[in-house]
Image (cartoon, rainbow, N blue to C red; front, side):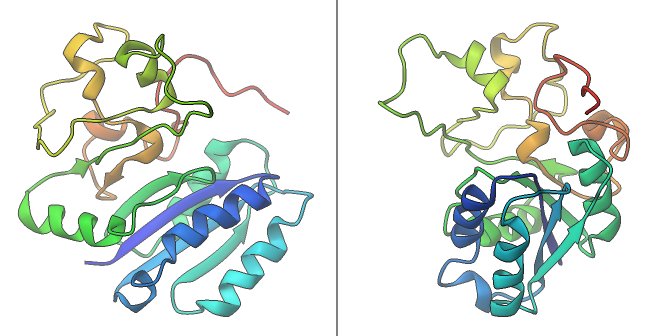
Length: 205
């Protein structure tokens, strides 16, 4: 099983470095069969230097591409096309990955015949978790927390069609899936925006 972790970024070099530091924590560089693919959506800050640093430190696990056509969906499509993995793990440039992130992906796909999975996604709220941020609003921000429970959401579709218990439907932004996952999981993966909720179309720059 080869895992490709896909990250799209634009002008968030310092945040990207923190994300990559968490991904390349002490044990992960020794794990076999995985890569991080970062696609820079034509940044004009020091994103390129951050990526060169990680490529030099981890040449067997890190790749860096540039997509000049604006829009995250364009960057994501570039990442998907370049990915070598039979498992695609989508994350963002402001996420801190847990130390066991990669091993957890490998374990769950070995254990369950799933097309796609998602673990806990916790929000790091400055000043603490606000009282008004419940699961209804949290889903818009990508918050997913089912604790240690394994839940089959194959029949638990929908977002605006009734959040209630359906708020646990996987967020596109942080989902892990097989490249050939069926349309019920990924819509048209190569044409869709990876946002966690279809609230608006991507605006052209």
